[in-house]
Length: 429
Image (cartoon, rainbow, N blue to C red; front, side, top):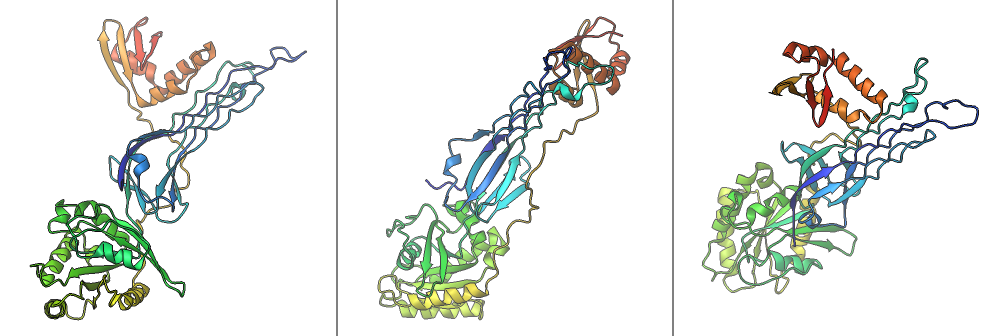
């Protein structure tokens, strides 16, 4: 199955918790603090893999979580960092924030990496909290949470040449003639339900990648047929081969078909319709094809004088194929290379907490209040409240942040209960 877009939720690993521990050595009273730091949480890293051609791996598995950091250990030993979670995607995959649609990265070279979610920092152990007046602190920090976000993966095929044209015009057959690709071929519309890639190699060592892009018909740019699904893949091709049907008995006007496709490309984007384009008349071996080709060239020259070179081929007899291949290489040599999304390279981003300094206090019952604050919630997450020292440090931090004063001003009395997330404390002056 061909899958070229996916929504994925990623969660980096949380940092490990710091340790409260003490040295237990002979002749060392109470030994001093010896709790190590927690390890950093694992990152979620997206890597471009040239061996992949689809985002199928993300169709059914949409949630990914990296490993958390190990907690700190006794004897001042640090916890191991969590392993990074590697997500492999095809070349040409763009990563966007699912909510804002901001482009985060554009992976167009093999093994290119992007850290899409960074692991949380590990909490500090009690070796960091000893002072001259408090030489045996029972204080440690919990690790920071890892980043969590939803991303949108969009794959755009990277090819030198893109084949466009109405269904059954001969795109898949041409691809099978000049490359080793084996697309499904039949004489009815929409035989091709997914883009096919093939590599054309010449004896002199030159090669180019050709993509058969299906389903472009009238209205494709607005969602008719399959075109809107696959039009995105044209963006990364360097030149286009626009195939038109020269069969005199198909009841269609070749120039009208050409104009229909050009209008769809223009509606999709000016950068697409302006790509260097070679027009290819197919089925030139049929009786009457020469007259239809002459009529097509006359109309084309009248509206687009000198813009499009025209070649006629037969996929059956291979007439004109060599000339077309040679012309494709010449056009490719002159064509600009595709421009990737303008993204600043981000190799690594540490988790950073940006709290809102405001406090929201709500009375929920007589003597019971709820305190809501991102800053306080983060402080609570970081605090190890299993030890009295940790509770006292948390209380001092709240006072320093102005929480006590804010509660008094709101009317909280001595002995009232204040809820912070799932933690209850008794308010004391």
